Length: 287
Image (cartoon, rainbow, N blue to C red):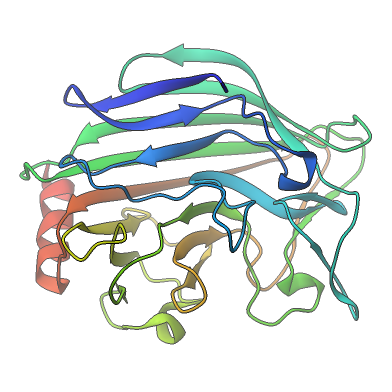
């Protein structure tokens, strides 16, 4: 059994963090959150789904790190498409820097197939009750990647390697297959086509855990900051949301340079509409 720890909000267990997963190399093993549940117990994540077995609950993954695959599955190669390559890396938990029932800070090492280390990461994860609601909690996640090589390091995606719209990589939340329709919207747009690639301050994703009675809403937000990254959204092919590091253009880190990202996700029971989302976010900002 893979080592894991419980994460609690207001004393309620809302997630499990698998920090040393026992997985095949082609899945790009990495720590992940699963199961992630609402306060009412509804499941909001999926792990090892049949359609994409390398999707691991809530995780940080990048398909192209200097030519190495830290996402899992086939690698997208320009002018060839998706190809099976022996290029998969793994993200290894090194040590805890801080830890309690509601938060942790850890150091991770991104290890390539040949044993080299292109990136070292510091990750902070925190769970708390959402202000003004007894049906919602908040997940805060921050990660900082540092190039520990002696050369510039390029972070890319299938999109930066030629696949239009395939700009995934960064924080990714894989949801369970739903029984009914999924609602995905921002303050001004609705539907997968409209919100995919947008840089709206928040994005709401409403689904169910395979039964119409198990409804939930996820609200992804960067708070008051201007979003640096685009939203990567899938509804029709599979349910998932990501905050994409290299949606259109690759990111290059100089030797020793750091890249930091922060995201908050409100995990609510039931389906929220625009008014409900705005009210929840306002209460969070006022607290």
